[in-house]
Image 1 (cartoon, rainbow, N blue to C red):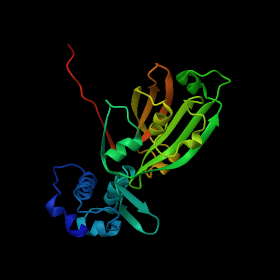
Image 2 (spheres, helix red, strand yellow; image 1 turned 180 degrees about the vertical axis):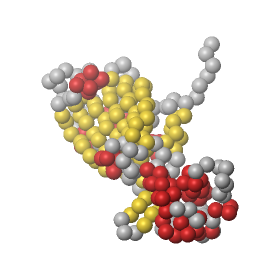
Image 3 (cartoon, rainbow, N blue to C red; image 1 turned 45 degrees about the vertical axis):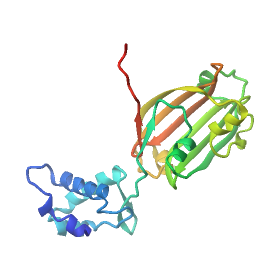
Length: 251
C-alpha cells in the first residue's frame, strides 16, 4: 500500500476520536510499526499530506513534530521527512550478570564499539567512594559507544581499580571476557535503573533527537571475595530495551 492510500482519512479519521493531529500521528505510527511505511521511506511532504487528508498544514506540522521528537521520523534538510530505522527491541534479564557482548552474541547480533575514552586517570570523588580508592590511587577507565548490527544501543563507562585492570588498552571486546581470562571477573552486582532524557551529545552519539528517552543504569560489581571490582555507568536507548525481572511470592 502506498503512503497516499494509507493516509486517506476515510479509513481512520473520526470526529469523536480526538484532535486531528493526534489521530494523524497515531496513523503514521501504526503505518511505521506495521511495516506499511518502511524504514528510510520518504514520507509525503507537508503540502501533500494536507491535500491527502484535507487537514491544515498547521495540523500536519504538529503531528510531524511529535514524531520527530519521539525519534520515529527524521527530517533531513533539503530532502524531506523519512521513517527512521529503529533498533531491534531487546529484552534484558535483571537476574543474570552478563556483558553487553555476551547478551548480543546470544541473540545472534554482531557487536562493535567506538572508543570515546580509554586510559588510567586520577579517580573522581564518585569513583573513590564507589570503588573504595584512596585520593592518590589511580583508576582504569573505559568509555565506549556500544553497537549491535550497526545500530548504536548504549553508552557504557566502566571504572576499575588499576590493579584489577592495569592497562585499559588491552580490552578490545568484552570487558567481562577479558577479566575472566585474568581471574578477576565479577560474580555479582547491584544495579540501579532510572529514566532520563538524553542531552545533546548523548543523543547525537545514540542517533536520537535531543531530549529522547533513555535508561540510566549504574552497576556496582563484586568479586567472589566481596571486593568492588567495577563501577559501570551506562545509558541505554529507551526505544530499544525492556528490562525484565522474575518475581516470586515471599514466604
